[in-house]
Structure formats: C-alpha cells, structure tokens
Length: 206
Image (cartoon, rainbow, N blue to C red; front, side, top):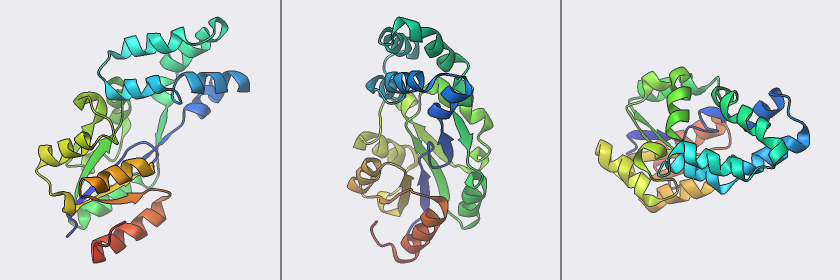
C-alpha cells in the first residue's frame, strides 16, 4: 500500500531556468552557451549539489575555467541570477495539498546546494504540505547514490515499498526502484497524477 509520496524539486515542483535567467540578464547567445557549460551543465555544479566542498570554492573553480572576458557575466549569473533560477509551477501547491487530503505523507528528495535551497525555499508555497525533506547539500550525498534514498527512509522511518517517488531524471527513478520504492519518471503533471493513481490502486511497478 502506498503511504508516502516523494518528490524531486527541480523540474517537478519548480522550473529550473538557468538559460532563461542568462537571457534575461542580457547575455549574448554564444555567452549563454559558454556559461551554461561552465555552470549547470558542467561537473562542478554537481559538487555544488553535493555540498562536500564549500560553495565558494566550487564557484571559484568554475570561474577559473571561464574565459577572462566572460567572468563579469559569470559573476552576474552567480549573484544577480541566483534568486531568479527557479519558478514554482502553478500546479505544485494543489498537487501536494491533494496528496495530503488523500491521506499520504509527502516528502522532498532533491539534489540542491544549501545556500540555493535556503534562498529559493523561502518562496516555495508548497512547503506547508510536506512532512519532511532530504536535500543533498545538507547530507553530502547525491541522487542517484542509493545512500541518499536510504537516508530518507531511515530518517523518517519509511518502508520503501510504501513510497512512490517522482523525478524528471530516469536514472534517479531507477535508483529509487533499486532500493525498493515505486517510481515514476516525471514528464508532466497530468500524466504523473494519472500514473500515480494507477500505482496507488494496483501497486504496479513503474
């Protein structure tokens, strides 16, 4: 029986929008691509998410890999762009509220740097509907490492087979399944709700 709904945050409950932010800051298309590769598309962004190395050190490493003439724009993206990086999807509050009204416990399991989560979560209107959260930067583990899933299960005393996990990345969903959870790869709100209802009713593996 499904008792717990577990949600990734980025691109499930909020839109992660670095390209749009760079465009809004007025960066030229070529500069946007250069900075995307140096930041959110590069391996160092995962180190921000992991939280083992201090954030300022990771950002300094990123900056050192950017061409000299791009560093001013890099700095603007890191500073001015930080609070603009996410927008809560219009359905997020209603979805989590609906889960609570149906009797489910609701949790977050997200890869997210600490300072970014603390800034962005101040405007996450769905937070009143969650029962707990595991965020990578705090626990120093990243999805799809099975350890972070076990951290959620252990922290909140959950049974894996009673959990349904939503994530936009197939690898993260497969990792959830590997520890015994049910999983849905999120491609859109209506489809996810439909599949969740099927799983909850029949508990079919997805």
